[in-house]
Image 1 (cartoon, rainbow, N blue to C red):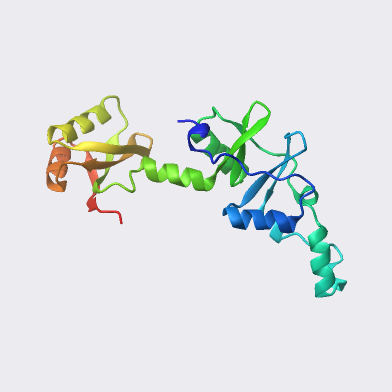
Image 2: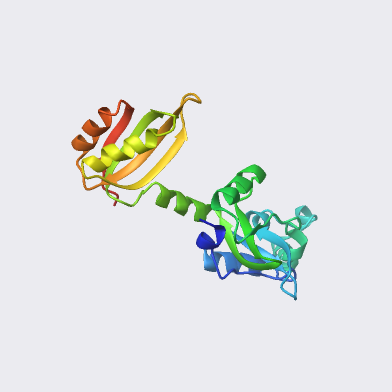
Length: 217
């Protein structure tokens, strides 16, 4: 799956001359926390986040009255506070690569490019939704966590055991185990009882960590 499949689009942008007051109003109206900044030709020149605006203030604020302060804040533009060195991704970037970039660079969103044109934005909220989908979080069924050896054919043995009792695996994810020789496997399974699934998996010799029936609201 690629960034273009889960990015927010069409993207809402502002130009550098927009006041931070207007930019904040756009964010709150659209329920977003960051805006790519483009010039009059549509070229990306920066990005501004809600926290940038909330932290912005005139350097002489300590000597200003409340009316003067509001006046000067209203004159601050996006171009004065935006981040100019923008980290971006292309629309055909893999989702996990976009997530890695966000974590490594400690940013909450990335403008998505098609060549040199901004076509969307991928944010941590978008990736949280992908995580919910990946884990089958909204699907009722039996959630199984097990610890299995990290060897060829182990997943095939596990999925075959589930299939033999009529279980339908709607999600399956693997995570690092307690040591490099093992993996945690988390599955959401439908169309079979928890007892049937547990008995089938126990016969494979894997270590069952948790088995529970879940009914998301």
